[in-house]
Image (cartoon, rainbow over all chains, first blue to last red; front, side):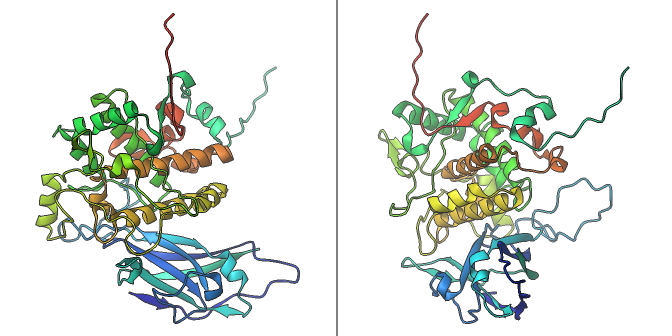
Length: 150
Length: 292
């Protein structure tokens, strides 16, 4: 997918005198079988795109990169992590195509949120022409979670 | 009278890793030094070039294609990413590559590419790897031929081949190289999972910056054929070393220490202390031997 906007994610209010010491956005099941890409994270910016400035006051919260394989080079099922018979005696390493988990520290952007919820906007890009990134459709993931720590 | 005591587990610290694994550190006088690629002496750079050139002339398991193929094609792709063993696996990878390099050029060590650019400085690949020629001959650090086996695998699978000879597209539109401030923030992170995850993130950023719009460094199966791959990963390994010193910690949790790092005959534990692997990092070195 090229962009993704989450439903509003609740940020329960802090007790008086407490502050958020750290906030993480965790993405599960991130695909990396195809090309490499970068994902930019924005909060409360549902219209953000590849041209949106990467500034805190524009909702920019952070980014992560995915180092991709550029496709499957094996036979059918080679890059299917579920195409194995496994049990408690299976000492093999995970299939190299097993989706990744990505963690992005978004502390500063979350601290600026004053509402009780925020949307997460993900924008996928790749290197482009003329010193600008260009949109990319490579992003895939299963779920995301916003964590805060006091 | 003897009393039975329960020995407290050793903390997961750099200074205790030697005791807990029963292996001795290497005396500093015997260490080899990996140096900043931008600060090599002419002789040090020539030794590196000689090593690369020698490896590319070998088609067997001592050669360049063999090592590039461990990270990439032909299958199996052995490299580990997004796991606590990302850093240990690549440390082992560099170690065995460097051994093979020194078999061809005994004075050579792997140089590291300091891609942490201070604000106001241009993002560049070091001249040692960016110059197309050296002393009137093709610079073996500029590009390398991709193995025929790797290309055959890609063709068989119907997949894209970036090119028979590695190329780069550095600084194409998009994010710049990681800044020095980013790296300083990275080293300050206390917990290893976050450090490893964010270092891997910066590592991916450098792959994208270098490969640009389709160069080999952009793709897992092809990146290790580019000679600058090794200098890039040497920087990654160096940052892990700096983090270890800063926090007096080794990183991966003890439950991972017995994990093998295939295809290399080492475990995670054997990668934790670079001095046990016989090397360390310096910006530059210069030496003199005085006859007795």
